[in-house]
Length: 580
Image (cartoon, rainbow, N blue to C red):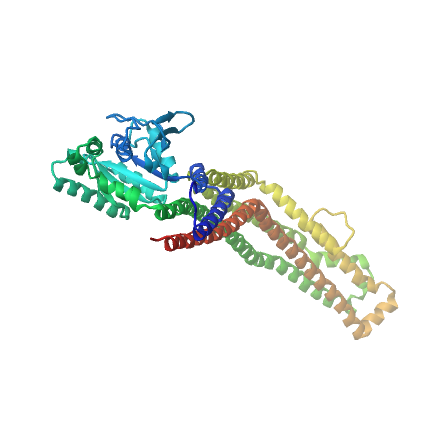
């Protein structure tokens, strides 16, 4: 804090404030706010080591420069009825006549007024002027101030544009003094009181703050400096001077100096908090959308599993009917009256194929094909639903404008992922080849059955595989009877042997039915999992971004809340320890 000797308590507060402002800048760098706010935070931290800064603002032609001249008791700034201040002007102390330094972006004016030994005064371009860049300059300099003199004119007090600009100053957490200039144009003291009350009520009601309001006449004050005592009294400038130069003594200025950057930090923190909440709101919508997709996946899997049970029941019914025919076939075949037939293996095999197997393979093939078509169509409809859902995400928040560069990067990355997901989903739906998918799926089912049956066949269809397996099972059993006539007679005569043979055949046919049903069920259940998995893989980059960004923002919000609590705690100690 320039040219100041601080007490130990003040120095401790200053050190803590520097640390907290450093933490704030680190957090801002991590998450980002607007470039102006980031610069304001840096300037506020740097301003801790500068002079007390009294910044004068107001609309053009409200008499800001004239008021500064009146406070300094000398003509250091140009005055006029048109906008005369085109850049920020810093007025500081020097011995001797006033001096201008036009180098850089700030006009430096040096004057001999003793009040400038303890503070610097800043004159700003008028707001609500034709040259809008002047207003931008003023807005950007306000965060550096330790005290703001807000000047309004008695002939147009507290306009809507002034209200809006004063709200900006309030939001930066700045201490404000309102000056109603040009009271000399009013007819009476009652008019002056009425205008002052109007401004005071407006500020209180519309902005929720209660700054001191000083009605003055800078023009009369200048006449008073020239020796006109009556004009000096009528100017009412003495009350404003006492407040600015006497009431705001050394301790109060130190207090305001320490509080000023906290107001800036709190404004930036609030802005960042709002931005975090906005991003979290977007991500929360995204999370709900992803949960919707997950629910769609779960419902799809549940519905498919349920419907598959019904469809697979038709296949199992065909196998059960074949099994029952097999039992009947051997009940009728393995008896004494068929002894001649039993001696003819080829006849037994032919009878088994015609009577037991019959057209079961073809019928199963048709049922499996129906299941394949149903599964392919269901997967296609599922992708259509996902694609439609993603398309809605593209539209949601698509035109959202977020302020900071970090926010724009967040929105761009999110949009890129959503658009990529939408393109992939649309591509799947647009290029979905039903016939190819059905052939692929049916081929997998046939291969699985063939592998599970572990038979060496050259057949190409599920029906051929099934026929080969079933006729092989028949040959295996009938082969038991080919050892010779004596063996056959023994087989027929001894009931126990006959029962064992029939049981062996029944077990083989039953095992065949169970094996086929299990293999088909497993293959189709695996296909359902693969289908759901493909959806999951497609949305995973988007989902991963949402999870990671959500966790990062939640962590940042917690850090921001801790920072705000620390800033509030420090503010309370500054007010308490440095109160007069």
